[in-house]
Image (cartoon, rainbow, N blue to C red; front, side, top):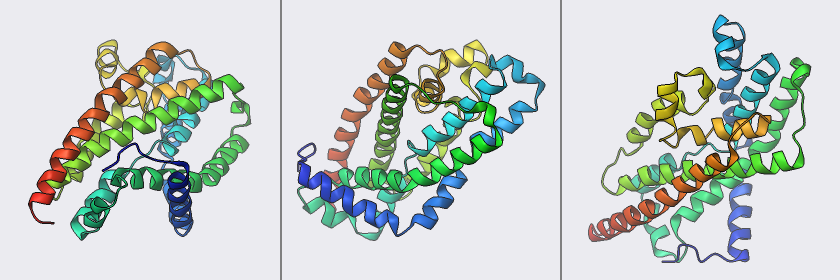
Length: 265
């Protein structure tokens, strides 16, 4: 079974099919985009709090951070564990395993197609935000935008691999998604979605740096917002997590497929 053996035709067909499929659910995707407004809720909470001074960000910088967090979240959100679990339980996984294309590529293409469909809705929400908060309007430089784009894509890769690792447990359990719900709690607090990491005590920040969570939202959001950030350390940490997670996913997947086949499915 090929893993990385993709050519241009396969990529084009996969993305085209998944994008067309996601367009059928564009109304639902619009609701998904609207459901990601948690950063804006937290912005209103922090803006009206006396503790805002502890963040080290003024009003405009805080606006830009949470808007950036919203945009990063829109294009790094991952749901592969739920799709994989449903396919495994309903028997759709078996024919996927018989094909020469690794099933995970299908989920990658589905996520990319969903991101393309989500793009206009995210842009519309950002435009409404600027209309309400015109003082927060800014355009990142080309270099800053490309770095933020790269950081967001790497955040997506980390999240996808992390969820794929959890999804592989579907070969052993029918409720692997429960593990994903469990990790969502530390993600919520340590990723920067509820507050920039500067809001936490130094000990908590130091602990968070040893997890993948700050590099999913906080780091790419700060890059996009043009705030001071250690680019070398941030990108180095993202690469490290990708390098750690990828072989674990492949090893667990191979072990799971052997068990799945042994069960006669």
